[in-house]
Image (cartoon, rainbow, N blue to C red; front, side, top):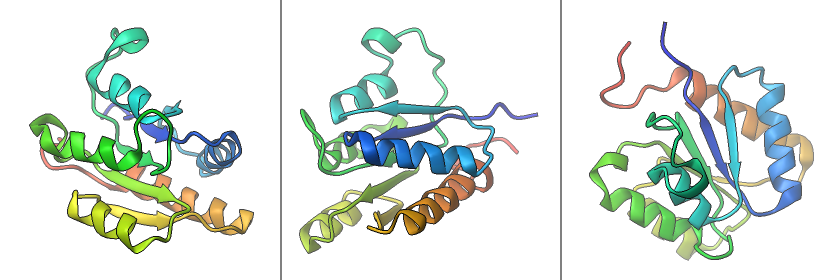
Amino acid sequence: MNKLRTILLAEDSPADAEMALDALREANLANPIVHVEDGVETLDFLYRRGAVAGRSDDLPAVLLLDIKMPRMDGLEVLRTLREDPQFRTLPVVILSSSREENDLARSWNLGVNAYVVKPVDVEQFFIAVRTLGQFWGVFNEAPGDKA
């Protein structure tokens, strides 16, 4: 049996993070969920630095990444990950309220796997996050994964 991989949520807004966490829990996913609050914490988790240096070296099943975050924004995180061979195939889903054409274009150019605009409606937000969690946490297999 495969070990369940973590779903990593990078979101600085406490309200949006709580809604996303609630939606992922409501999807009845067995995957552990880790929440980080900015781009620096995201990279610390992935590179196993600082407080999380001792965590397992398993890659998350997916990174749900907000764009507008303090210290380091999501696009800079995405650029860093795609430049590093060990993270090139990590599924990254932008989950952002930004509808700016520049953000969309830069995300796709940097190699994002999906770009989801956070719906303003709470129920639509829950549906979107549940669907993302089910697809990326359960059904998706990254290249090199063992069946």
